[in-house]
Image (cartoon, rainbow, N blue to C red; front, side):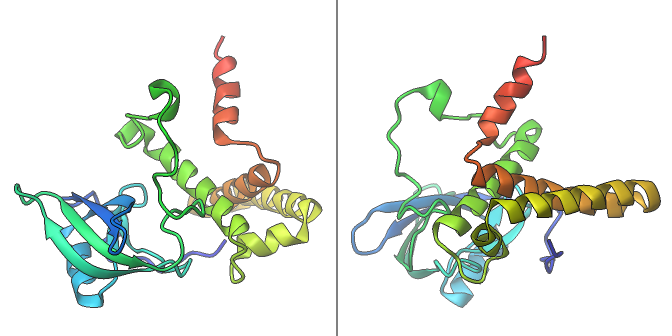
Length: 218
């Protein structure tokens, strides 16, 4: 993995945020819900495409910047309290990182199983980052994203994924022995990413791993 370019706001605390409901301008279908800061709203207005604030990564992100599934803004409305937005867009491709047209593709059946009210609390931030990364990896493979390292690794097959995971494991070992903490953190992040690729390839979910860890508490 390579370190990407950082936004000026990356790593900072969440700014003032308001929810933004994104809907198809022709059908009225709700495509997704995200959060906007003042800066992301200003960038949305100036560029004509949607920008949001990521609460997991704590930085601005332009919808479709890597996938190409951009949202061309047709109209922006706000509610009677001035604290939420309704944005009508022309959706290019799919809105959801899972490859579905809308993020709302599932019907609620069981509250405890289906809904995570604590996902975005501070204590769950780390888990939500893993959930997000796992979803991105799934999406790159499912959508056969041609310029994606993840998809290129998937095409090479399980043996290559295992080999790469082994190489990254050795990088962590060597870094732990000979390098500074920051370098080891970087190598561990690479290792976690390649572990998630392996999990997606083997259709092993994070929930299954978390449940296994919970079962060992006794």
